[in-house]
Length: 285
Image 1 (cartoon, rainbow, N blue to C red):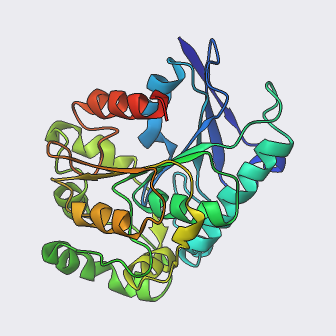
Image 2: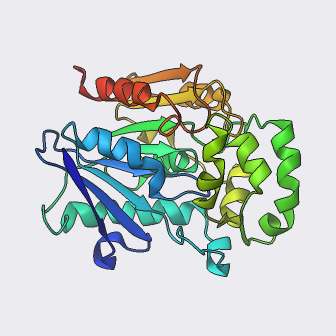
């Protein structure tokens, strides 16, 4: 069993909107999992994994990135960069290492799970914060790696081009979100899932589209798992392959799931991915 609670104390979370903590009844693993969501998302994308890993002895920390909350169509969101998100998360890690959580004290270096844009943030973190290990799930690409973008998605997102180029908040249409992000979820769940989506930064979209986020792969020296998914239409599996080709250390692994799309932590059968990651984390290294 485990329990969940939220932290909004800015001395700990900094500019992140909120931090959700999944606390195990019995802490077995000293390094917490820090789970970073992607575009148009909040920490709700980690509810399944949060419960799963905390029930197995991990403390799971799932922040909402800066300005990621309901009714977040705010000018300041539009100008927020990927590097701003990186800085916010690095500061959060620093606060957790020094101040700790109110109930637990100082924390060890985190195991960072990064999904989509969160995966790009995760790749950047070893340059600016202590990291124990990395799990990149359908990560957005850093500078030097192609988007491998679906041409139909590129056409669909043209309607958001004025907001993106204007560095304003934007949200995909229901049709685009369903076709390219929720494409492996039961369509009966689409309305609720879309309602839970939030606006995203036009600046962050530009950062990713034009490869502005450079990653120093020589700094990624910790164990790293890179996951791609065959059915993913927004961050195609080739991105995970190409990120792997940049690794300069020996202790990294690349998986590709044929049955999943963009949300292997949410889609039906997510327990398989969770168990595989658990086994990877707990195996002898």
